[in-house]
Length: 480
Ligand code: TXE
Image: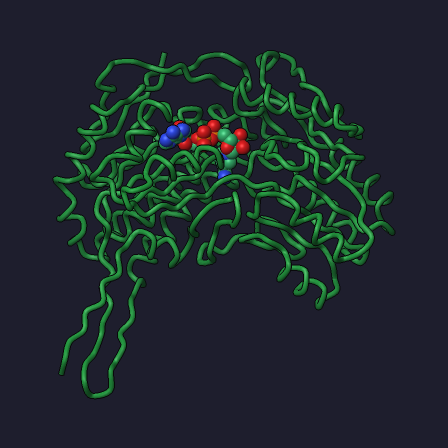
């Protein structure tokens, strides 16, 4: 049985306790590897390693840091097939999606921030002929990065890349649900010649190592992506420690379809927005509001398209819809489908666990599910399900659509489908979200601010936002 190892001080090591967690392949329900259950002892070793190299890394030239990060990105590219297969096995997602999205973006994240590190600059402010102010942006020091299971390597690199590029040393904790690609990545770090201690990867549960990582006094900033409940917990336990927190949390994103949209393209894209990655993306459009004149026509075309999604073995290149990530998550999603019907919803397609044949017969598959006839305030339309379940309903007026869209505690993303330019700008301005797409979804420019409002989080990732999060500005005023 493969044993995943921690990456501390440039070495692959077991956890101090020697304990392991079981790692299950979602498509088969079988245990296929073991994960170190790390604790504070492992954390102390990682902090010591980080502390020892902290100064050297902070004073490494921008070009040298960029070179090492670009080497890492090149190694991801040259190992893309193996990494995509590992991601598909570990997460249950379709291998074609893992290759085209997860691994492609993992390399792009690192390459982007390698370059951002050499372009990152700060300001100066002249006081006439009296004095000049200049702003230093120094690395914070030792930072913690905690990432979730839905985009394992993609969100892991999305956090560590800006942290490293801005001269910090990092202690990172991937999700215990999907540890494999972070483990394979640590081997690439050794091959790339990343100096020992610059990045340390600790595997294990939120309880055993996640918690200690957030409260360690020498870790001055935490960048977290995960559930809103966990984000709230981290805020609470770190309160009074004055750490910088970046919290990218859950979403319950609206999709607004107006009658004048490009019909065919909108149907196709709204299906992707609802079901990509089995609906396990914080940006997924799980609440679909359609202007009444085209409601029946759109519903018919949408359902037909959803029914055509090919569910199957994540390792089959033709699969479009894989397994949900764990048995616990499978049961959570199925319980919400049950709830949707109790709340008066009608299942238009899907609604059941999908039983595959062959090696995947015990896999955690859920049919892509569409529910109609729910009230906007019901739990199904208020709570993040984070699975292949969406609800649809008609609206009549623009103002009504905006109220429906803004009617949850979340505010991460939204998509608007219309050819009316003025309406597009008007509605985008009124939507309570950090990201609004118009006639597109998940079209990403890594320079843009990424994150949400309300219960979807605090702070922004991406581009200069990330470089600023991982640095401390210091104003120096010098009199002429
Ligand atoms: O997230 P968790 P999970 C949402 C989605 C999902 C729910 C739970 O609704 O169903 O969150 O998913 C670590 N201190 N999203 O269980 O628990 C944990 O080990 C420190 C949306 O994956 O938040 C993992 O590495 N760390 C999200 C990471 O936090 C702790 C993507 C996320 O785990 C911890 C994923 C603690 N006390 C889930 N407890 C998005 N916005 O994309 C756990 N962790």
